[in-house]
Image 1: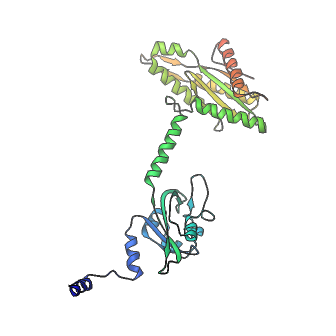
Image 2 (image 1 turned 60 degrees about the horizontal axis):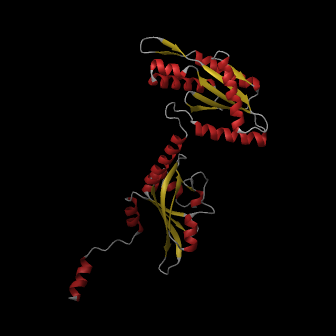
Image 3 (image 1 turned 60 degrees about the vertical axis):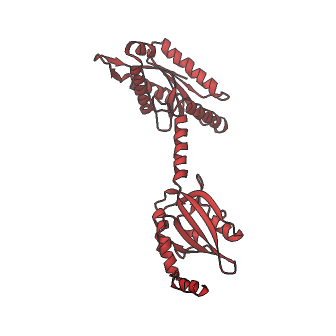
Length: 315
């Protein structure tokens, strides 16, 4: 019986022992794989690693891993391949690791990756290097996209697709803090769409929504790229404008009034409806908080209403 087992074992094909065979197997994997020696010099780089990073083996093999551009990075940080390298830690303590991070591709794009690091040991159990296996982290990438989408929705007005009140409050608080520390001048502009209730009553809420979207678009065009304008709520918009004095503030407010007046919406019956806004603009004063600046701008906006609408007051 023993002889028959030996004959069967001899007849069964034995796996090749040359490295080329195993490299060919690794090239069939969809995961990126590479080996480093104890000095973290790259010894092997498979086809999937090339596909995921756009770096060919000839560009990385023989180089230290921390010298190669597809380095490990974390979200919002630079390369971690010097002091926090998972390969270095694995070679030092012999512990395997699994981590989610980013690899910088040849084009400079950060690729979210699920990374597994294992020590390589010789027959005596001595650590002679490490292997890293990495794959495109689809789940992590999708979760990140969902989080960014949720953050965007939290600060976006669904009707106008402009910044919403929460975002404006955050921006205003930041401007107040900078003003207190660095005296960086800024102003607040409060903008109210005139006769909005009458527009809704006469033409319907869908037409009113359209008017708000158009006004929001015109206000965005009226102000500078460095300014922030959004919908505060209802028919009211607020802008936070940086680096202004009273003259610039008044000029920006007047420009908003002028450009909105150029808008004429076509009603269902063919009638053209002209729009206008009343504006109050207040330059930040030392010692004021966000609420006080807003209150002054709001009072100035009501002065514009009392003066006949379609105008701006600024101090």
